Amino acid sequence: MVKLKAEERERIFKKNPFDARLGTHKLHGKYKEYWAFTVVGQYRIMLGFSGAEFVDFINIGTHEIYK
View 1 (cartoon, rainbow, N blue to C red):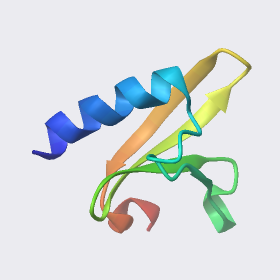
View 2 (view 1 turned 120 degrees about the vertical axis):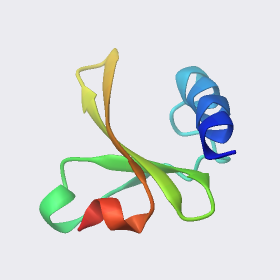
View 3 (view 1 turned 180 degrees about the vertical axis):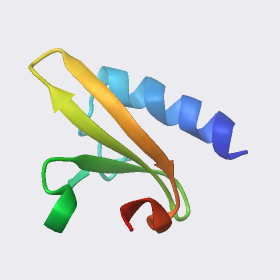
View 4 (view 1 turned 45 degrees about the vertical axis):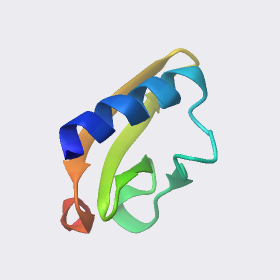
């Protein structure tokens, strides 16, 4: 289920990284260079913007990915 939802969210992200359905937000602390958006429940995708046209997905998982 998480994989299918992540694929769906990625399609939304490609159209608009700040679509309200994603809840895209800037991270803080040691991850302040990164952003994240919600996949489903506690699952998030952590990402970094690489210039105007590129994005690196760093990690996917629960809030444990921030530790």
